[in-house]
Structure formats: structure tokens, C-alpha cells
Image 1 (cartoon, rainbow, N blue to C red):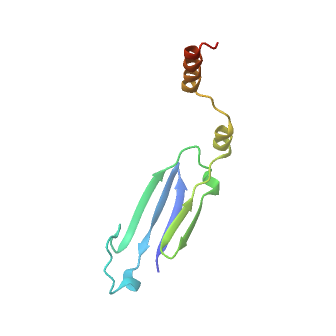
Image 2 (image 1 turned 90 degrees about the vertical axis):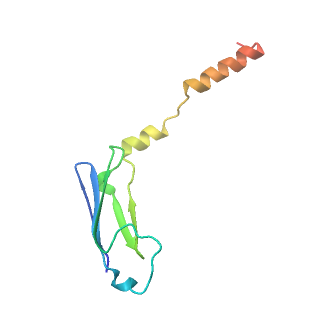
Image 3 (image 1 turned 135 degrees about the vertical axis):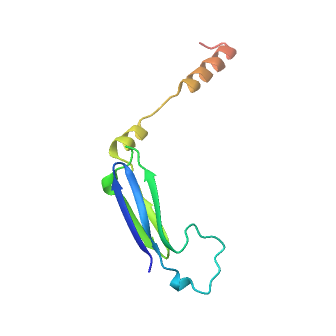
Length: 100
């Protein structure tokens, strides 16, 4: 059976575990990221991730980790934004057409 451990410490998400290839005997995989045994991956997390709400699910050999946005990151995303490039393009268009 595959074993996976996930932890978050100091803004780093660690995923580690072991792969038991006993159930894959006789198969010839085209690609494997890890050899038989232990593996580990680390990911730096930004402050835009709500680290207390991270969830993970292992199903049919596929690990799905959900990293929800922090509330302040969602609020920043909801603000309307009009970029200076859009304003400059609007001014140029109106200057060419003779409108103020």
C-alpha cells in the first residue's frame, strides 16, 4: 500500500511517502517519477494560501492537494482594476478621432 505524509511548516509544504510496487509486479511502466521506496517533494507557499485549510486526497494512486486562497488574496482579486495601458489606449483613440 502507498503511504503519504503531508505537512506544512515555515511556509513550506512537504509531501513524502513510500511506494510499494508489489501490486505493480509484472507491469512495465513507461515513466515513473520515483524509484521503489521513499520519495519527498517540498513546495514554498506564499501568504496568498490559507495554510490552515489545505486538504489532500489520495485516490487510485493520484494525490490531489487543494491550496485554498487566503481571504485577503480573494478580496484583492475581487477589486476592479483599470490599468494605465487601457487608459492610454482610450486617450490615443479619442485623440485620433478628435474627441476630448
